[in-house]
Length: 191
Image 1: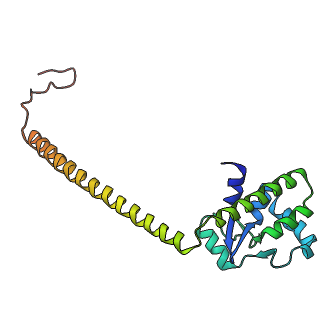
Image 2: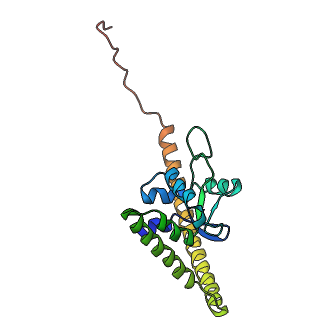
Image 3: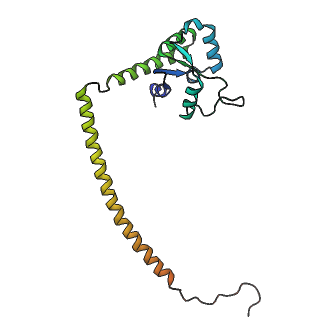
């Protein structure tokens, strides 16, 4: 996975906006989440609500259920506070307050990831003919899959018959008791 794909995997859709969470950004910038949030709080005027917002409990629970966060909010490990989410504009502002070579390189990669996501969204079908073509392709694919599953079922029926024949043959072999020689007793004293 290249760097842009890694960053794209950390972009979430929350409140109808594409955002990145403070803990993912801290990991990318090689700083602690606490230090990242302290830098933001020192420059809070740069982050209006449409640039950065804190998740509420419901949003956090949904992310936790989607395995973004493995631990909940806890005083014994896990996340202690609800995370902050940064929009693309908030990330641009973040580049202004984090002034290190790593921060600059990471911000360039993040901006490229957002541009790539916008390009992907622009290639989605948006006309009636595109949607009709997608439906037609989907129906053809559905019919092909049904044919494959039907063939698979026929193969499975033949296999079941063969397995039943093997089971009956094994049962017949087990029912015949082989003649056994008397066993020699173990030990020093022999009869």
